[in-house]
Each structure stands twice: as structure tokens, then as C-alpha cells.
Image (cartoon, rainbow, N blue to C red; front, side, top):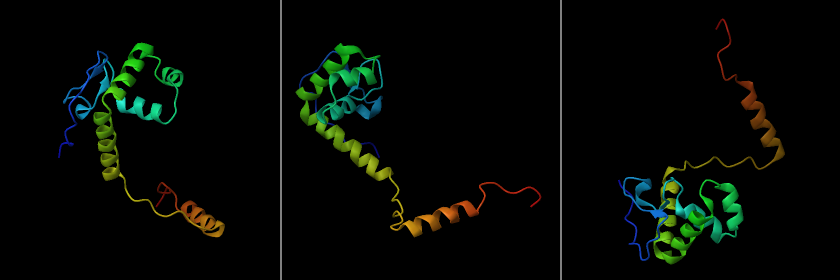
Length: 124
């Protein structure tokens, strides 16, 4: 099932590309596969532009700043894209077993895991 369509772009930007054949139509930095939502999400959480430049030196300041400007100019689109990503990730996640609550149960789990070999012993 294809992901839900995103709201229309209100203000286009030269360094941001939206293509249904790439990243399910999510906005990406042109010439890359870096989703704008990733840069936007980190920036909204307090990551500085300088840190983004260190993480993505191939983008350069113009494309990073243009991607962030696109995100802030198109908040409805970016919010929908982030929500769509969360929903897709939630569908893919397998429920994890609860972690052992006591030191004794953690030790017992570790001993059980070490009791079986990950390969077949020779001659068996």
C-alpha cells in the first residue's frame, strides 16, 4: 500500500526536490537522497546549522539553509512527512521482549545465551 499523499508545496525552493519515484515523494535535498525532514527534525530539536554541515559536508551551506528554509516555509508538508515516517516505522517495528528487571535474571539470561553455541560442533 503506497504511503498517504503529502500536502502540496506552498513555497518551492531551488535546492529541494519532490519526486514520487524517489523517497515516496518526500522532499529531499536535490542531487542527494538526504530527506529534508531529517535536517528539519534535527534542527527543530536544537541541532545547529554548523553541526548539520559537519554531518553532511557534501551538501554545503547553501543547500542545507535552503532545505531548512523550505521546511519552515512548508510546515504543514513537513509535519505530514514526519508523521508519515513515524507511522511507517511503527508498522515495521517488532515488539521487543521486556528487559530483565533484576540483576539475577539478567545473569541467568546471559548464562542461557552462552550455553548454546551459534554453530554446530564438529562430529555431531
